[in-house]
Amino acid sequence: MNKTKDNLVIVLVKKPTIENTKTRIAKDTSKNFAKILAEASISDLLNNIGNSNYFDIIISTDTFDDLSWFEKNYNVNGFSVNNEKKINKGMVINKSFKTAVNEYKYKKIILIPMDLPFVNVNDLISVFSRLENNNFVLGPEMNGGIYLIGMVDSQAKKNVFKNIRWSTKNSFNDLISNIGRNNCYVLQLNNDINTFQDILNHKDMIKMSCPKLYDLLCRNGYYLSDKKKYINFDDLDICIPAVSAIIERKYKNSYQILIQTRHKPSVDPEYSGLLEIPSGIINKYESASTAIVREVFEETGLKVVTKNDKTTYRNNKKDVIINNEPFLYSQQIKGGRSYINLSFLCKLKSDDKKNKLLENIHETRNLHWITIVELKKLLKKPNQFFPIIIPTLIKYLNSKNVI
Image (cartoon, rainbow, N blue to C red):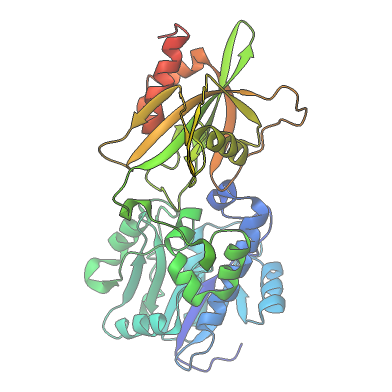
């Protein structure tokens, strides 16, 4: 590569493959989606920082094969630091800085990961300016990691990356301990994209500065159109009508019910990850019994009918009133979201051979059947359940003479 400036930005990259994806993102979506997301991220990052007269850009890869792939697909220069044996992250970072100083004679160097697509030229120029009066600049992540390392050339001879517990909550503190606080300027807390929650946290920034990543997320339903804008229920001064379903089926001499893991990080991050039964909001002018059938199908793919649901209708001119008798009425009056929840006992439609579980990855995870004995054991730790449905589960166990 041709050195044109004294300042260098190194982007630490790995070729996106199905086998080499962000584990936590792949778990929340799929390996293929995680791979495509990584490709979009690196495209946006290189586009956002690629037009500067203040610094050069190169990529640092583990292998020549990866380097060749990036040079071909992204038209960037770079070098490979590891071609013979596997080395740890600290050695990769150390060799990247030493190569930049010893071989290319750069004076100030910044290293960032490929999953930081929203960083821009001005952000990096600001870091270089901090290196005028500091030997190091570090960008700490909220989880204890590091999203940016800046260094002046005189420090490259020192092995400051030794004994760092990389990719842990200790990474930043370990590096600060090696460097010394007096030699370092610390940037504001931020995160690169390690989890899908990081993507959701950066949705506004992605929309503004990452066109490829934004387009990918739009196509996969993570941004709502202007016609379907998200309503922040927490800003409404009303109770929110909801329904939930105990889907019951016979199992040996007893019963099983369906439970799932709540996964709504964009609209309800506080309670995502808790166990629940299928639940959802009642639409305008939708009966509660209709709502629960719809919500069960949307979240699980199952077709159900409600049990113990007696309805009567009273017409008065244009008004239609429906009287339901749910299994239980619950209301949250403090903490969390202000729900009024109607729970129903449901059973599967026995005449539908295609009535199989189908996970909705945008709302739920880990759909599975459990016995009422297993449910009793789980309820011994109620904090693992979505709070509003706990009274329903307790009443259900009482009805089966289990508690």
